[in-house]
Image (cartoon, rainbow, N blue to C red; front, side):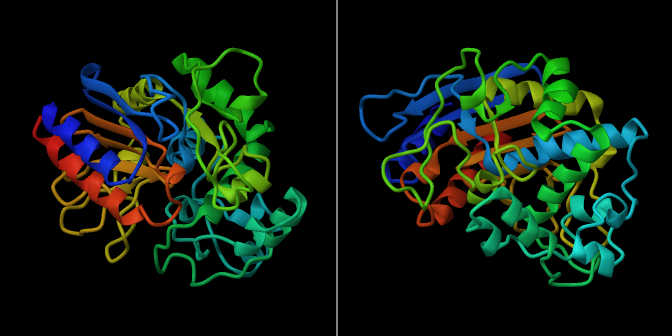
Length: 341
């Protein structure tokens, strides 16, 4: 495991992130679990195992996609439902034949994000911007990773369950799995939680943000939405990964996009070794699924071997944009090493 220690220490030293936590497991057998560095880049706040991280876009597979798949398996939702049936206020859904499946597989036609929603002065204004956004391409003809699609999926889940997204997640995912520290908006709960690792948004007036979602669109919308906002710890991510492996749902573990489009499953990247570009690098197992978060988080699962790789950092504490490439390099190297353990 010293190789991983050296890798993490190298990327902390070069300024990619101030602290990190790595958990490797093969099924329920934890191969290594270590915390590194100091949360605020100084020698004061030592990171300890089990701290809460802002998962950023890991919210998409772990909250939104899991809820979506559960509703489908319970017969409460059909992936081939037209989006307009659930969101009649969505202009693009009125103008185009667009399905829930296409939203979940990032092939619904939406751009990656809405700069106008990010800068909105209220949640109502932000939702208006999102509901009136124009498509970039015809649904089903391309794959463009889009936060907007998962924001809309979050709304659909809320309407089907008749619960706010955070409550639906708590009732349908967290409580059944015994998750105590995986939640939205941790600052709003009364119970005691582990230390929350700080992040720094680009628009910060000063200092750092701890316990408030880093993603600016999610923050404008209240922090409890389908694209970002979930907080969790490495041990509880391991629990969720184990549950996914045990259920082995093909919607989660099988590529749902047709030939010619970037492989993806419901919520996750799908590692097809014939196509480069996955965040796990080119040497990780074929058929593995995973996802990353902008704050510096990632989870990859290999269903064939049961290998689970969890890496949590607060990359954005040091730099919002400048460390993106070095973070990609770190992830690729980490998963190459993990594959050999």
